[in-house]
Length: 321
Image (tube, rainbow, N blue to C red; front, side):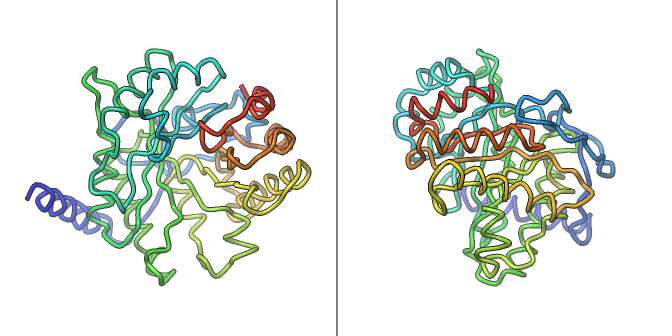
């Protein structure tokens, strides 16, 4: 019953927001916590050279520098969350990207106790925490409800997430045009619920796949609309799925950044590059990834996921601290 009520409330929220906005009009943001005024038009941000760049705004701050990822399947982290955070601190991690749930699961937080422990431990040590959620776009009320619950989450100590990022990759909705329409509706609703100053990230599927190797996966992907809604793009630059060797890893990473720049020409969107997969990458490949990140106009970079990062990979990633 509670689930039905929650979903009904979320649906009413989504309908109300859509009614207020008409078509999903998306505009720029500043950064901060939820509950702010209307958003202003997009303000172009100056390009930041390398992951340690000094060009910063409150909207991009959680995404700057070196990060690491936790998904709901990283059992060791969830069983020992405080120890994991200590290890991240020791490796110079600035931001933890933490998965709350996905559209397959029956609750908004798969590991609620672990989430609270990680957020509290991270904030005690000065780390940022960005929550991320994978929607299926079949049940927008459910997806929106979970996104808003995540944004408004607080631990018993009163700590919350520093930002929220939407994982945009599901093809559960087979028709790309309908998938795009639902993505934009949900994104507009999330922005309205979060407020003008709350940082939001768009985790996008491999740009190389979207544009070059698999254009039928999501034709008409709404790069520019998303750039006007979200503060940062996080491309899933998982070169281990496509190429081998340090030079190929560097090329694939550069290609991903270049594609986003072309697709969002004139907007100069902040980019945080997500590399990996850590379980499959080598140390030299990681070095190729890092060298490219340091040469490109990006604000940060990270590896997916934390438990798979090896000693050799950490040595390369150290340059991004």
